[in-house]
Image 1 (tube, rainbow over the protein chains, first blue to last red):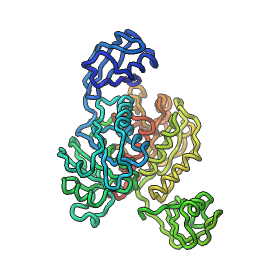
Image 2: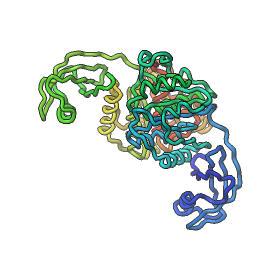
Image 3: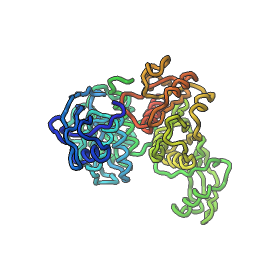
Length: 246
Length: 246
């Protein structure tokens, strides 16, 4: 299936028609016609083989010929929550790369020192879909709207929760000691990692997170930009959770 | 030193004047003047504290007040060799991120299926310098001109050598079995990892590499773009070689 182009159809199994933009691509760009085969992904764990039954300038109907449920490629649940960077393209780049490497959920945090308080989720979602198609992922990451930091840390959440920051133990007080993220991640466990804005989380934000069950962690000695820190965190979670490695 | 801006002066210890572009930035943008402090990095392991002695529109002279040799932040020697992507900005993005995460040497490969046969090293070098300054690295990665694949694999090279590709054992024959890169990396060892172009290495190229002491490796089950694969490889080498992790 290496070189096949996928079509993303969120409800593929229950539909018989490609969404407008995918239909346009299939018929006008790829010039597919009746009888041609399509590969569909629903972003919820299933690929489908289908055959085109009607194709014109306006629409593309199909009939499913094979349903192919996929096995997850990693265990656990990889959730990254990041404060958007001042420059949009850095977040968009991150969204693409994290999807390729493999994540389950992406949240945006509105923090005290955030340089950006608005993010166009519709645009990020398009990037996620393109990356899911390009990298043949069976699941599309869940994308959450920007959430105020305080609200986010107070939300009920399963599994292990970590906050990456640059403060020392002394700055934070109790619970400030910081192990290396890679050393405390557990395979198969739902995991949430928070990465702060360019100016870091505030001390009060870190303390609030600790109070709500988050643990302070370090991403190593390198001084990383926000989007690089978030990607490195996703890659560590992925390394720990991969089912088969080669 | 967290918020200080560094000036990159390759021969800082033997000079008394900032290079033209750095002088312009110091005097015209940051409006520094006589008596102000500068932090210099030579990209070869030493930071310097300096004081401005002359500052005008054309030049900025300094006197070193403190020489601060740095300890390496990781062991071994992290060398990534990658076939440039068709789109330049993907390689530029990779160069920035790999420098932040931490690499020692970057080479570009001209392969059979390469989508780009020319790369502007001058531009990549500027990106490396900006990332070194931004992430406060004491060493600037060595940057090598584009090299023909055959010539590259025949070069004498210390340490462990790996080639990432998507072929199965059957396609390659002897030595085609592929462990996961992370499982075979050794701490403190000079390591070279080759990542191919969008269309992968050719079978002949893989065989030639194996003949010259390279070992086939996998980067995991995710289908990664060239620049993502290269970054993931750098991060794995970094994870294995970090001296202190938090």
